[in-house]
Length: 55
Image (cartoon, rainbow, N blue to C red; front, side, top):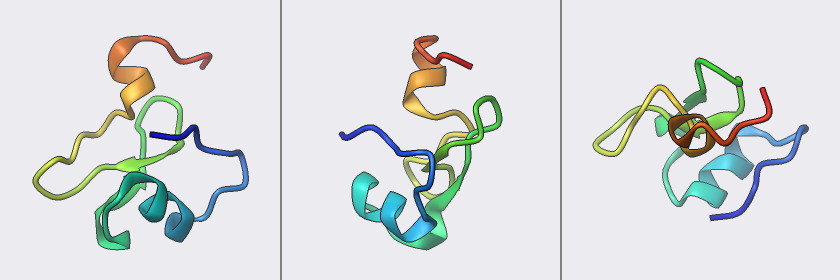
């Protein structure tokens, strides 16, 4: 998985994460785009889940 950029669009995040735009949402902690909805959805991005975020 690649790292998101500050000006990433939901469409770019969907390509980066390998999912549809309907599964994209904002992380509740750092507000970056993540796979929030659907079967693999989580309200936290991978960095916030592991505690390795700079936020």
